Image (cartoon, one colour):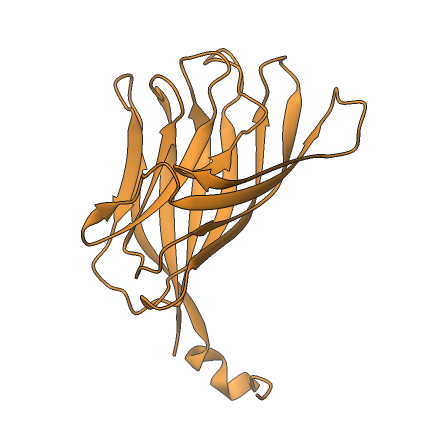
Length: 186
């Protein structure tokens, strides 16, 4: 392993736009898919994702050419959540049998508040190793105060990721955008 030299800068890593999806009043899930699987990692960004149902959360799900995986035990997830109103520094939410990787796990406020914003790096996978996810998030929890923290998760069966989706745990998502970039090494 070596250090990248100035004359090799153009041969380094590239972040390439793969797609975006925007919510409207009838959206139950935002999905972005792509056909080029030559990227090693994906940067997934959720912006101002809102829910209609008070106390609902969001889930990040991964998929391949056969669709989005949403079985009741397809994912495991750990989220470290901090809240401006909490008497503790951090609350950890962990679960081994989920239908998606938890976002806004302290329960979101309805559309009157700020939505959930997150960034997550998703490992592409090669069909032989489970796909890992790591990232950060912020949102307005159901009490109306700022919450957020770190998240890690995993698709518990190995796939070659070629699509991602975000859905509300209950009701619609009337607002927000989901965007994906691919990281390619040359």
